[in-house]
Each structure stands twice: as structure tokens, then as C-alpha cells.
Length: 435
Image 1 (tube, rainbow, N blue to C red):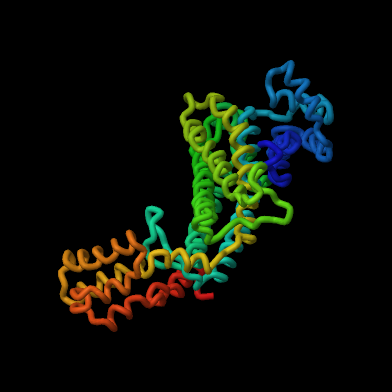
Image 2 (image 1 turned 60 degrees about the horizontal axis):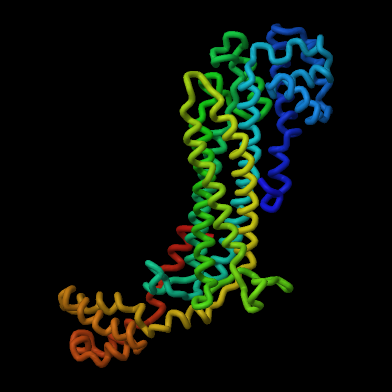
């Protein structure tokens, strides 16, 4: 991923030096296990650990690979340069390249997931703070982009919190799904390596042994991993689309923070554009871009082919780095987001009283009017509000048929805003708990 959308902590997981360090740990732990089982001499296993503080030379490994055309062999050759060729002769015994590659990839994905879990927790904290801050800030709800009925800004934030909380649960679950390792040898039958070696290596790396691998770890695990990242990206887009709509000039119920010295347009000095949330919309597309290739990686020929390899070398770092950056950016947007309660009320009152139409409809049916007749009575007045910006309550009070069915006092009572916010506390308890 390009530096513009990258954060060092996540990038470091995918650096070649990190990868080679994990490869080394896999090989060294495997040698320990084989020595414990009496398969190789203990002194050879101990000799491998002489390289534990070595900074592997990425350029040297690349140089060897240019000849061998095989990355794992290039690494093993370089390792022997540090350990000694005789001491290293039992390294990788009974193993196949995918034992190293797949186990390493899952270690990296687990580490990346741990960062993403903390990122989501940070976003949840920001959403919760803003939800309680605006728990009773009334705004109009919209369906199809059209005014519907009143809600609160707090409920909007709470809705996003609940969605992200589900994503946190998904991320934790998929961490467990991806945290497997395989040291099972060619074709995965353990013909040339004891299953106890796999158990030892996995324990040391914080993984669980893959119940059954072929020459690779099954790719349905990785498909699920990237699918979860895609869902999280879509949830982020769900949030930022709301903010982008709120920042539109004719709405302006909320907006990104605009810092001192910031410029919105090279041509129009008045502009305050929602650049961060627009950027996040684009980054969400990049994360989701990994989902379909990950799904297509599930189907491999027989016990393995390498059609998945080039895909994962790209999507694993790109998707995790992008999502890490995006989650941090979105958290900042939520924390600094500007809210304009007065504009919310102004927008709702552009069509005075119109959002109370359902209350009047229900009152008429409860008063004995058929639903069809009640709907007609309410709609004929509502359409005048749409067309002429008249006051809905005044129109109803001037409608003899409506007054005859409900009376003046009951019509006025139907315009109490508190009616629509009476269950906000109940919803908040469901989302955030009793606290």
C-alpha cells in the first residue's frame, strides 16, 4: 500500500525482514521439537538458535533467489551462511515450503487482526461518546432521502456503534479461525515429520494445529478473514455516507472538522468539502477489492497449486494496511465531527408539522375512521404542505372532516415532539447496557 494510506505499526508486520524473522522462528522451533524427539542431534538444533539476533539481509536473500527462483530455498541458504552449513543440515527436515509460508502468513494475519481489533475498539469509544452527547438531539429521520419521522442524532451514532460492535465480534471470531499453523510436510500426510513437531511450533507461535492440511492450509479460512474485513469496510462506508449527506450545503446538520489554514478548493475559497469521508468511501472499496480474489483462492488443484500465492502477497498487506489507516481516520472524524442541532430543527420545519402525519393517521383509525378514508384525509392536507409549505397542523384544524373525527385538542396533541423520543432510553440500554 502507498505510504499516504499506511501506518507504520501495520506496515512493519508485512516488511520482508519481519517475514524472514517468522520463517526463522518456524524453522528453529521445528528443529527444537525434532531434537526432543531424537530425530536430529540436539547440538544442531541449538546451533540454529545462534541466528536468533541476526538481522537477515533481505538484499542477499533476493540475490540468492535470483538464481534459485525459490524464495524459501534462498532464505534457507542465507540461514546456513549464518549458522554454518553442517550445523544447518537438519533445518527444514521433513518440511515443505508451504509449511513455512502458510504458517507465517497466519502469524502475520493474527498480528494484523490484533491491531485491527484495537482500532475498532477505538472507533466504538468515539461513537459511544458522541451517542450520549447527542442522545436527545432531535433531527428528522429520512427514508429514500425524504423526510420521514423524527429521531435523534444520538440514535444515529448508537446505530453505528451497534453495527461496529457486531464487527468487533466478527473480527475476534475470525482471528481464531485464521490462527492455525501447518507443519505437515509434502501433501500434508506427516510422512516425513512427526505431528508433534507441528504441535510444538504452533504452541510457540500462538497458533493451533490445522486439523487437516494438504500441502497448504485450507483457504476457506482466508476467504472468511477477508470477507470480514470487507464487511467492516462496508460498515465504515455506511457511517461516512451519512456524514457526507449531512455536510451537504442544503442539509448541513453535521460536518467534518475544518482546521485552521485548511483549503477546500483551489478555485473556490468558500468551499468546505467532506474530503476525509470521501476518502474513506474510496478506501472501503479498496478493502472490499480483496474479498472476491480471496473467495476464488479457496478452490485449488488437488492438494495444492500456487494460484493463491500472488493474490495473497498483494491483498494481505494491502487490505490490512488500508483498513488500519481507515479505521484510525474514521475515529478522528467522529471525535472532531461538528454537529448543528439548530439546522436539524430548521430542516425538519421546512415542511411544518409534516413529520407527524402517521400520528394523525393512527388517531383517525382509532377514532373509528377506516384506514383508507383516514389515509385520504391526511394525505390531502400533507400534499399541500409539500406543494405550498403551509403548516400541517393549521391545515388539519381547518379540515372539518378531521376536526369532526378528532377534535381540536387531540389534533394539537399529535404534534408533541416528545412522542417520538420516549423510547430513546430503552434503545440506549439495548445498545450500551444499563450503564
